[in-house]
Length: 128
Image (cartoon, rainbow, N blue to C red; front, side):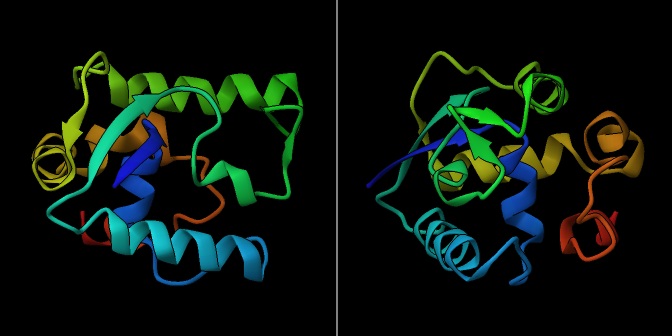
């Protein structure tokens, strides 16, 4: 199984506990979270709309809400991707283990998570 994921979604998936924009989004996020834990899953990284965004009600013409919001989201992605080789396909289990080691303090995710609307519910953020 191959997934395409935005950089910041590598953090979101680790903190996901069933909250989301609507039922379809939550169902998709739950399925992707399950797939990313499989030994046969690989991940391609991006700073564009990904497999999670496909079910987001804020996705309009492949942009998150609008151009301004999209740039904020891209900067979150790029901050994560600046620590990971985004030019290759990754083994999912190895990638998520590496991400957990890289982003292991609140300071390490400040630029990414500080304005996230989900950070009060996010288990990844809360454990830091």
